[in-house]
Image 1: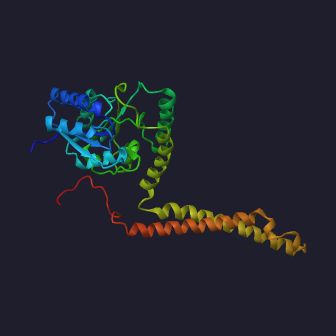
Image 2: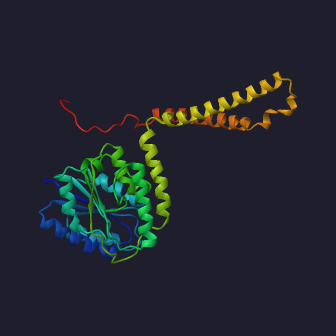
Image 3: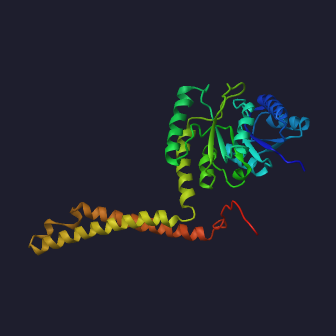
Length: 323
């Protein structure tokens, strides 16, 4: 069976007009560089005739394969299914709206195969989107992601990316995590992440499928990824540490309250003038003790759940010898 150099995964939603020119453009580039390839088109519950167009194209070009969802699950789900089905040594993801140029594929392929990158993300340095609706929010989003992840990329959300096959077979993408694939890959041990300036095309057909809510959801997803990646196998280290600190603060506040009361009594002061509930330390100690105990128990329960997880001992192995 012939080895496949490149798998091109194209998630799509209501893009019937752009599918033929896109696949013809990809095929032209592949033939020019003598690549063996496959195009996996994942229809994310389109309501137009996108799937019928995919069926026609796959009959004309056997390198084109199609997967159709029964309903719309989102771009992350489409990419994850594409990753499961791809066979190429290098995996390229790109959008179906013709805003990503297939002419960039050879450069991305060389960065993976010749320069040794695990993942290369496109950077649409010059964009044709609305500055107010997309460009400015996107820059803020990317700056925040760079700060939290430590990955120096300018455009995390660019759909045009290249991966080693090992990367896509080692990660899971769900929810709306597709914009954080470089972060997920880094936490999976693939730290050689590069960037390539790519050409951004104007949209020719249809309209954008992403609204402003993606930026709000994006920050929540980033917090989820950072937490799950770091503490999924040791939740007690997070909850237990914070809970212990809060419980300690509560104990100290309670001791201060008790000492103040004992001092007042020893000096013959009227105890009624110094009620325990009059002191702010009473409420600090009460809240901290309760929160500390709850967080500690949360960590303990998370550890019990983790120990019963079927994936608790799943670890990514890069190499083996003499096995």
